Structure formats: structure tokens, C-alpha cells
View 1 (cartoon, rainbow, N blue to C red):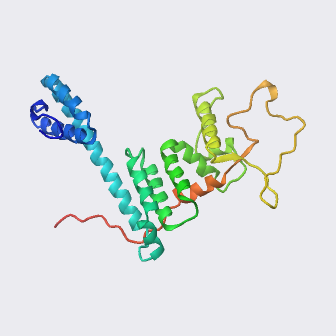
View 2 (view 1 turned 120 degrees about the horizontal axis):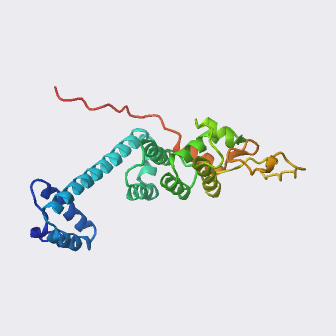
View 3 (view 1 turned 90 degrees about the vertical axis):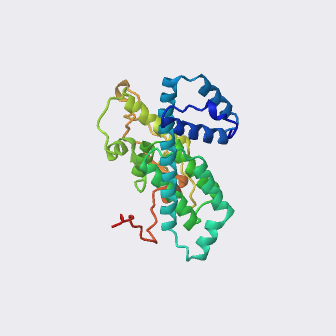
Length: 272
């Protein structure tokens, strides 16, 4: 008996049984009550059910292997970008604060949704080790954003960067989208995306500031062509401009700025 799971209750039809046994034992060790549940299932399974379960476990174990491979690749790429001859960087990497960022990232890692998001994570952790432009609490929030937002959100953020005052319509075209109807699902998604980014404090409507950085109120306009003909403001409005907030600017620096390699990474050569 291991991890509270009686061996006789583990499904063992052919080769797949060993896979299921290992998966159940792993899960039983990680989650105390899971062993009992799975042993109960195993006792009730017939041969066909066991074969199906084995197929599931094979896919599951492969998913875990792929996840570990992604983590390993990300850590190697981070270390290849850090100058460990620099005492400040070495001290930072070894600090409890930075180790906490690493633990948070990989504890919450469930497999990168895309290669692009994995690169964002790598960049955030690399820049967090090499620079101190913002507090670690902000860096943690940047890591949360990677899970919270979609690739389309990040495309919009990148489109606004260094283009203060760009309109929704201009952004839509800049990210390569075609013309769609105002009552389409694409238009609804686009409006929702801007609500997400505005509420999240990443983008805002463009505002003028005075010498001291205070935002200047917009003068009230006497009428507007907006909404002419009885229609509401377009999801792809061409009048109001948008810009990144200070948080949005910092996110660009941390997530979308790739540090140059300090160590050349070579693909392993096959044995002759």
C-alpha cells in the first residue's frame, strides 16, 4: 500500500494500468482525500472503464510533463539573460522577495496558454531581477494580468504604446482587424476589452496635463456630430483617443521588453 491506495484497487489492464497506477498514486500523495476516492473508483471500474481511464491518465501525465518542460525552458531562458557577475543582480536573484515572485509564478502556472504568454512571463521575471523600476507588489499584479487577460488585450496594449491619442478605430485597424457590424459579437468583444483594460487601470482616454502632471479638464463641447442620425457611439469610435496609464507603461517595460542574452544558448547536438 502506498499513499493509502491499496494496490489491488488500481486498474491494471495491460501497459496502461501502470500509467494509471502512477497517476493515482501521485494524485493521492498530493491531495490526501484523492487516494480514497480513486481507489473506490478503481474498485468499481470494469475493464472498458479502466482502459478509458488509462487513456485519460496518459494524456494527463503528458500534460504534466509538458508543463514541467515549459517551466524548465523558462527558467533557463531567464538565467541566460541575467548578468550573474553583477553583484546587485545576484543578490536580487537570491533574495526572498525575488524567490517569492518565482514561487508565485510557478505555483499558479497551469501551462502557458500560448508561447507569447510564456515569453511575457519570462520577460517579467527577467526584468524584475535586472531592474527595480517598480515595487514587487506591482510585478505580482503584472504576473496576474498574464493569466487574466487574453492575447487580444495585449495586442491592444501594444498598439496604444507610444501612440498617445490613438482612437479605437485606429487600434482596430492597427492590429489587423477588418470591418465588422456594430451589432456583431466582434464589436461587443472589443467594447468589453476596453472596459477590462480601463477598469484594470491599464488604459484611459487621452488627457492633457499641466506642468505639474495634473490632468486638465476637457472643455465642454457645444454639440457634437457623435451619435448623428440617432445612432450610439461606435465601438470603433474615431474621436476619443486612448493612452496607457503609468501602470500600463511599466507593464510594457516588464512584459514586452526582452533582455538581450548574456549566455549564448545552443541546441544540444545528437551524439555522433
